[in-house]
Length: 366
Ligand code: PMV
Image 1 (cartoon, helix red, strand yellow):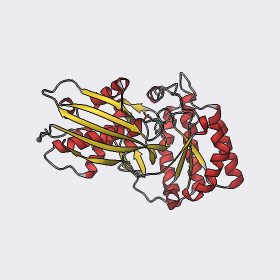
Image 2: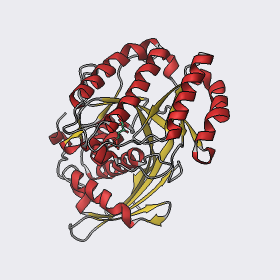
Image 3: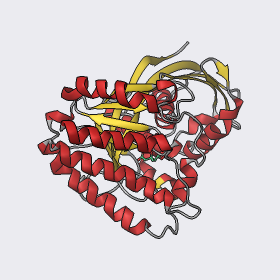
Image 4: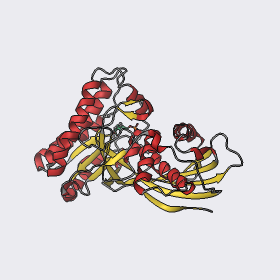
């Protein structure tokens, strides 16, 4: 598909006001996206597990304006008006208005809440932008004369979410989503996420992700800045090639259920992501001492018990502890007794692989 195909036919229906709600989860990449071209086009393909418990719930209330003009919206987080969210949404609206021309014709109230603690160091951009993109698609659906297929609905919503925050395009469906053109998954696109189409072993069903809140503070370097530092990065070309190779290598691993090979690939991806940060110019480090303490504990525990516990990292200090559901009891005991102490206030979040977003109320007129 091309960008052009996401530009709608002129709207034929008039809707004066309405409300819609969606909840959408976060996701955790196994092969990481780090580095982008213009218009949020990724430099390399990525694949992620969709999560199930870390979610954003967004309600958009809309009213037709007397005449089209500038964007008119207000954002609320947990019931509190958030003028500081305005610039991010304004940028998003500017990027997507070509594909959602109704944005200029309505006033919007955007109310959002997260199921995970606000300042947990867990990025809410993937869940937040995907939830908002879905709400906007539900509104557009009401304005079109022709029915759109469910597949097109999700594809366009993913396309829009990507324009809000790249990795957000992988949050709408589950349980494994690929984003970025590549030769392993033929349907993979730089424009939106697609479901991983190949067989996946039982071991990966209900895979556990316990997120250790090692550092709940604001990141010193944003993802946007980090992505941009891949321009002119001395190892960029090799890294992008490696991501393609790792996606290809993951295919037989996912099919056979080879957990050791899975862990090796996923941990290497996480450390490579952070190695790219450390070798950028300017260089930076997002891991904290406790991130390394946790990693070493995981390696020691894996060696002594033979259990299949591994880790991955986002662009931050928190550690995602990944393990199969059938080893949950032993690994959770280990997390509680040996890892929780490295978390701020001993906090961690138990999540697992999920199946994507859900509409909470059908778009309706009020
Ligand atoms: O979606 P962004 O621009 O916040 O970038 C996210 C990048 C990583 O989380 C580090 C990796 C990924 O693929 O999700």
